Image 1 (cartoon, rainbow, N blue to C red):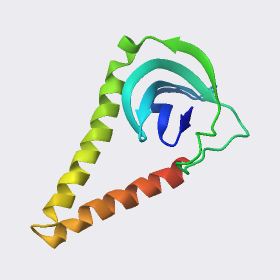
Image 2: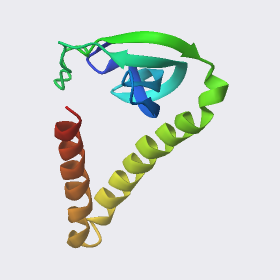
Image 3: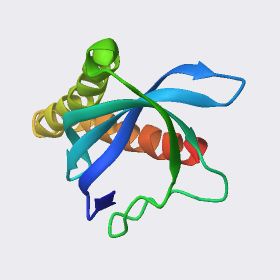
Image 4: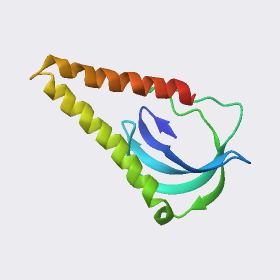
Length: 125
């Protein structure tokens, strides 16, 4: 559960099972919506009838059914990919903001990143 961007949340998706629509994901401790510490990995399936709230002030409203717990050591690739995607993207965003002071053309990098992020949010819904 996440409230005001602090708490726990699931990040990552691998080994998607088409039969029962389950996948392996990792539950993270998050701070300001950024994954900080991986806690456990699970094979989960989304329960029907619930929607995700993208408003930061509210907790995550999506419900999951845990099918099995997966050891973190078997999910290291997903954990490293999550770290690299989140913090690599954040690094590019911050560097591009600083580069706008040198050349205003670089303002397009963070704008494009925000647009891509919003499109991914809408598509994943």
